[in-house]
Length: 170
Image 1 (cartoon, one colour):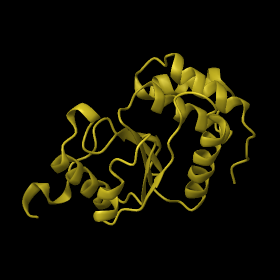
Image 2 (image 1 turned 120 degrees about the vertical axis):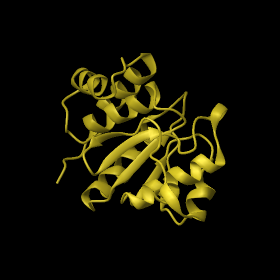
Image 3 (image 1 turned 180 degrees about the vertical axis):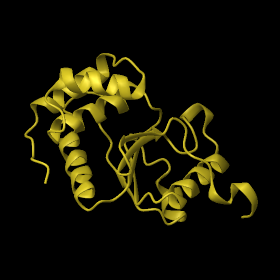
Image 4 (image 1 turned 135 degrees about the vertical axis):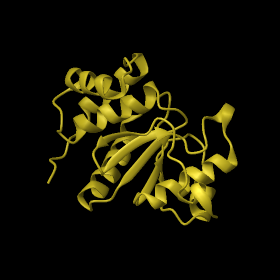
């Protein structure tokens, strides 16, 4: 690959939550209804070229995982159920993220779109790691960070995280 595309293109709506350590975005390649294989490849190349050490997908299905493997990008898959018990899935995700943060990895986490669900998961992570104290504080911070008012699903995810056993950050 040559020219200006050799370094890839950044994923849409990429936002740093923890500078140089944790970013979130829309799914590389675009949302389901506008997903393009070529764009996905360019965005994954950009992630590699910009020092991301792992991509974590929250999608319900294993979409994109084969593309990460094909381009030699480490990945993890942590689907969060849309109904029923979400607590254990959130704990598994948050433990994985905390371990990667301690190892000083640079992580991109994504869902199909950067919307209420993804932002609620991030608010929950900030609560669970004790970076923020409770759902009201986390909601306020993520709303400012993403420029998006958190709706019912995101608020419920943050509230769920507020009830989970927490761990101190080292």
